[in-house]
Image 1 (cartoon, one colour):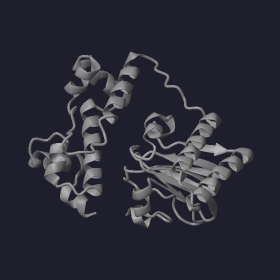
Image 2 (cartoon, helix red, strand yellow):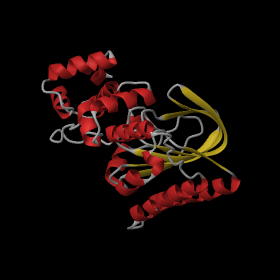
Image 3 (cartoon, helix red, strand yellow):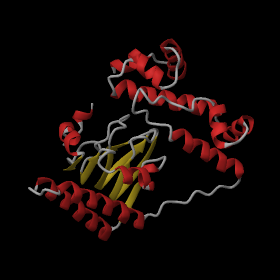
Length: 281
């Protein structure tokens, strides 16, 4: 549960839109798998194993990390002795940054290794945010936003984002499809249901024939277009079941299903679980 994240007061996060804190020495990075309603950035110094899903990487020294809640997987840290800081904030707190910055739009959660000079500079910014958090200052939110923006821009200076290199038209079209698919989510309101649900819908939006879209997506990714769509809808359904109080029927309609039974059958087929079993977790 989110309220189990060390140092994170969810009520404070909801009221202020941000939370800055020092990381305990022997805990996981404050990120709960599956959360999609707040963003994370932090600074860790020490020896650690940091994994994304099934992949793990050994890290030494100081690392700046950014976590996008819409990325498929979130990082977990295991370490005996580390120090560091974290800043957690909602999308409403900094909408422009989370929508435009490549650090929060990346398919993966970026990690940036820092040298001693860079680490000292970043540490100073996080310490400034901690001081501002505890200060009686009327414009603390604006100052925190400035600090977050400074960290992001300095991170991009240290490690500029890679420009996508499209080898051919098929690769480009596949990336356009995957980007368009991701931009359909998250579903925020039951009154605004999912609009694009089939390969035909995406082909029409991309102004290509559906057979061409199916062929290039399978060629580049190894998975059919329909499977990408189904897995992403199922992922969104799981998030809505776990993090909203919407009824199963409301979730079904929001995801474009005409009847809840259709949604139940779809969810069981894709995930092997029933919606009610996921909600109980």
